[in-house]
Image (tube, rainbow, N blue to C red):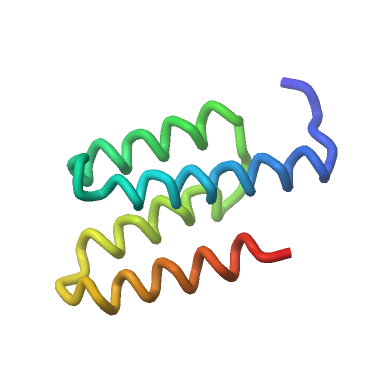
Length: 86
């Protein structure tokens, strides 16, 4: 695979988080396992390397596993804000 510039890596990370947001908004029409699988597939398609490459998947999993959906949704949106602001 070609070496990506830092700008290209940043753009890929932004796309990953945007995809997580889009999938989160479809949570009522898709089962959680499908959402998580689609997010992982996107991450792997970009060839992202790093210990936190599945952070967006972990945030989505947290929402699905948390019994307090209101709190879980707040955590999700706060994380999205922190990851996507420039």
